[in-house]
Length: 398
Image (cartoon, rainbow, N blue to C red; front, side):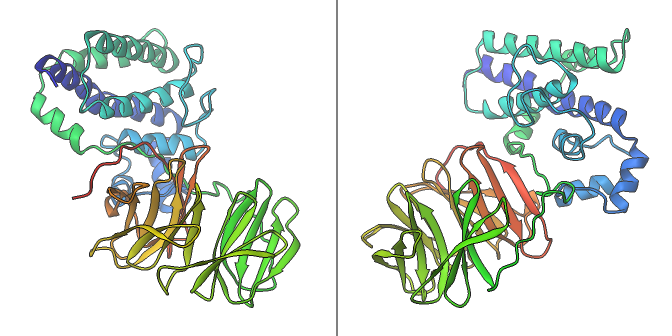
């Protein structure tokens, strides 16, 4: 990156680090007073999942001065304190969408945009366009919060013209992680549906938008209509069923921890696939490949059972959940190290995208929503499901 580009990045980083959190703090205070927010926190009436650092900030209420843009955004969004953006939360507003909710989303998006440019050249035009977009947002926020009083714009001008240490700004941007929006899956409990089953459930897979299959004890796999909450049919397997995956009109089921049976929705077995490990519970099938894990390794096999690659690293001793994104990259949780690990679809590269610093505590289940590009993680003890917006580049894990 050229010296001029570095200077532009430092200027943008100074705004992101010192102005954006202040703007979100001001907006948040108009929606809920610091004392009221503190009371909600003390009463455990907060629906969002908080990291350890965020819990510390909440405990310091009524002081909001150190609230991060991420924490303000999460509270505004998931505590339903304001009308969301026209494009829905987590998306990119178009130029005609200029309500306050749209601009809250823009501030988050622009933060991510600056962070993502750490290794890119920033042209003069890109820099000027960013400043132009930002000034328009700030003026609208002032109109919304302080009609006739340009409080936010004056704050922007002060920060924009202030001296700053470029090296310090760039270092802070380097360690600043991509903002991830988290929430409790059931914001108010209204979406919870209880479906009683005659046997203990083990694993679940989606068949279509209203149907799931669940592997259960006693060698049964009920097919369930989640709209009506009824079991529409039941498959009886030849052995104990564990991990289960649905792909291209077929169910793939781990049987007796020794093989995967491919079957149709009536239970007719059309293929048997040997497993590379005798302690495999979790599987998924994507792009004609079987992905499975034991406690220490990730395997990729052909549907004929040939091992294509294996990923193993000494530090990971308790791999749990398993899912894949649209490109076939593999996501797993490790309960001991409190991490979510991503392995590339060829098994050659890996990266930890979530750790204890993100609030992970005994993560087990995991699912990647390929349509929305959202990662769902649940914890063993907290009774919490957390959603993460995923945007990342895969790099080699050293």
